[in-house]
Length: 330
Image 1 (cartoon, rainbow, N blue to C red):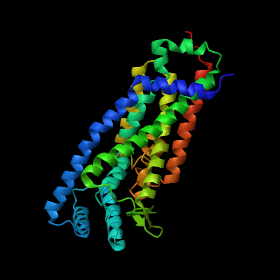
Image 2: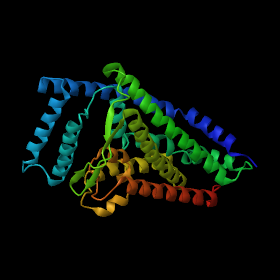
Image 3: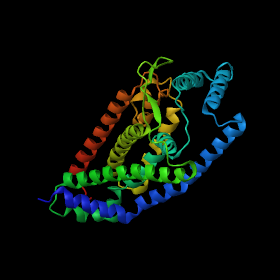
Image 4: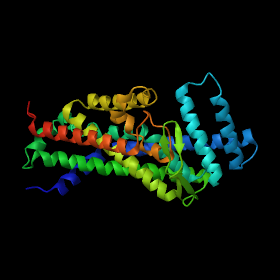
């Protein structure tokens, strides 16, 4: 019987030959400098607006601005909930003397990952994962692959393991490139800067009883771990779609549509409680670390992780059942 190792090795070589991973790296290398420049302009505007680089002054001004917006009748009630949470978070940061927006290469990497895990990075994962089986149908190599004395479940398992490895590579590459490129502008310090975690939402109130400071490097490890988990679930579902749909274009289109729809739903589903069971609404697990308001009231980190795990397990189960039983020759 053929072991999994040579199969994974073969799938890795095929993935690299497609050069899609290289395309992903090039996309990151082009877009990250753009985001770095935008962040630099934001920092410059802050300095011009407030006339100081003292973070306490800028944070106090942010609190005043948010408070003024809360008194406006033009602001929707859902946005007011977000602003109330943000005001409490900034006030707590002031009390603890912890700069919530210390600009450097490390904080840029942290914020870039936080803002990318909901859509941008999952889209990159979908690009390399959606055709991992459907492309075999398109090129006709699936029939040749199944003539080898290898059990079908091993073939699919090797493809899934390869996907998990490439998810890790994409997450790692995103972190390294964002740190190196932004650090050239903002500096490479900040690994030991304190970051406040442990926020808990109780209704519309932010509970700070369990808030504590941890080094930023530790926060980044937690953040990247959550991002990896979310993206692995996207890879599992992409594998399922690739098994169910023989067309590469259709497979990729389905995943892109679901991810983009998830981003739209995240901003609209606060009153639709059942939406919290959709995997797209639960991808932004990193936001729980900083006390951000969840898309649907009552959602927690544990709930999102369990929901994602159920979706991932269901996707893998369907993929393996269909792949091992379907008639490939017709």
